[in-house]
Structures are given as C-alpha cells and as structure tokens.
Length: 362
Image 1 (cartoon, rainbow, N blue to C red):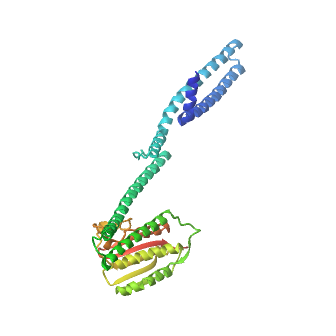
Image 2 (cartoon, one colour):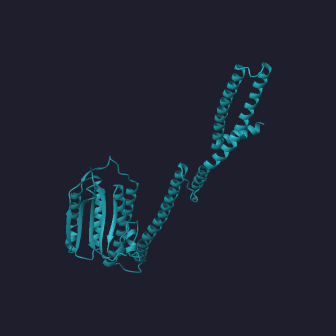
Image 3 (spheres, rainbow, N blue to C red):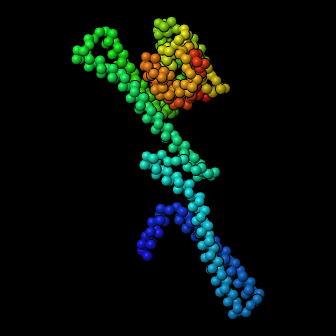
C-alpha cells in the first residue's frame, strides 16, 4: 500500500494530465453533488409540503432519493473522468511531443518536425519547428565558415612555410621579388584575420539607443569618397557623387566602414572608367538608399543572391588575387542589418549597383 501511494504521488508530481483530471473531477463532483442535493431537497420539500405520501413513505422517499443521488454522482464522476482523460491526453499530446523533441535537442539531436494543429499548441509547435530550422542553418553555416576559413589560411601559410623553409636551408636565395611576394601573403593573412575580427565584433554587437547618434548621411558619404580620391586619380576613375541630405540614427564608424568596403570593392574590380555613388530618400522619405554603381566582371544571375555571404567568391577557383577575402560584403550586410536596413545587388551581368537602405530618423 505504501509503495502504491509512493508511486501514485510520484506520477502525480510529474504528470500534468493527472493534475488536470483531478482538478476537473473535483469540479464535476462538486457541481453534480450541489445540483443533485438541490433537486433532492426540492423534491422532498414538495412531497412534505403537499402530503403526497405518509410520514413513513416520506422517509423512504428521502432515503431513495439520497441513494440515487449518490449513485448518479459517482457514476457521472467516473464517466466524466474517463471522457476527460481521453480528451486531455489528445489535447496534451502535442505538448508531450514538444517535450520529447526538446529533450532530443539537449542531447545534440535535431528532432523531426512536429505536427502543427490549428490552436495555441499548434502555433507553439510551428515556432519550435522554425527554431529547429534556424539552428540547423546556423550550424551548417558555422561548419561551412570553419571550412572556408581553414581553406583561406592554409594556402598562404603553406606558401610562407615552404618559402621560409627553403630560404633557411639555402635551397633558394632571396630577392626583392620573392620578399615582396611573401610580404603580400603576410598582408593577406593580416587582412583576413582583421576582417574576421570585424565581422565577429558586429555579429555580437547589438545597436541600441544608447550607442546610436544622429548622423548626416550625406556628409558621411562625401567624407568617404574624399578618402579614396588618390586611388581614383591613380586609376583614372571618374567619380560621380549625387547625395540628398538626410539625418539617420546609427553608428557613424560602422556606416563609414560600409562605404569604405563598397568603394574599395568598386575600385578593385572596376572594369570601366567611372564609379557613381548616389544617396536618395525613398519610400515616402522613410528610407535612405545608397547605391554604388560601376562596370565590373560578369556576375551570373544565380550568383547575385549569394554575393553578401561570408567568404563567398564568384571565382570558383577562389583566387585571392581577384577574389579578396570574401568578407567585405558580409561585413556590410551585418552592419546594415544591425541598423535595421537591407542590402542588395542589381546587376545586368557587367554593370553592377550595390545598394543598401537605412531608416530615416523621423
């Protein structure tokens, strides 16, 4: 008996089903009992009031009414308990499935998608499925990024190690051209690590009202263009700047970095003699759109949607001489996303317009 009670209370503490059944049975019993007692008392009152039966038969009538009341209450309670148990189990089955899936998640196993119903638990299941999908994508992205970073670091490190080993053993003699090449490899490594640090910093950063400030975006654009004037002159590139004044709330250093990355890419991959930079209010003056346009290498239409991904290269051979680190545009996307904006690329193959939008301070 003691073991039965112990097992019962253990199941009681862990089972929401039994708790709901117990509470509802209590409510049902109380309601049935109060109703039955009221009916019984009223019937007995009528019998006694109008002397329908004699005193002895009246007592028998009262006992009979009490017996049937007790039997009806017990029967109704048992039937209600079984019906309630069936429906409660059916209603709570999605919650039990959700609990099981959550336990699988804690073990590092991605569960199968949950069945979605048209109620609040169905909405919870749908949100849980979306969370699982997001976590899977994040895990896949993390693995891909680690693989890409390993690939990016392996080549320059192997080159540096091979040449330094050959120089130290006297297999080859160093000259200016070789040292310049080794220096470029070292610079590439430093640039890659620096951009990885920038991207990680922005991914863990969350802009809020305490760090945002009012920024005249047109002035930020003009100042960024001035920093590249020498490069424009050396490469004989004509710069066309058209900006409309506007005030934004954001991080000025971050927006300068966005413009620097876009202009650097435009200069590096420019195949024409001009770069056009525009800043305009759009969407009923609620957004500010900045566009950097130039002629560059051909970009296939199926590659456009991937251009802002981390370490993504248009060049399938992944040549660093033409592909850079593959992080500049990813940093642009992260910073603009932190500002509540969007990024994109409009391209007809050879003429490219990289753009981003930012909400205007109202």
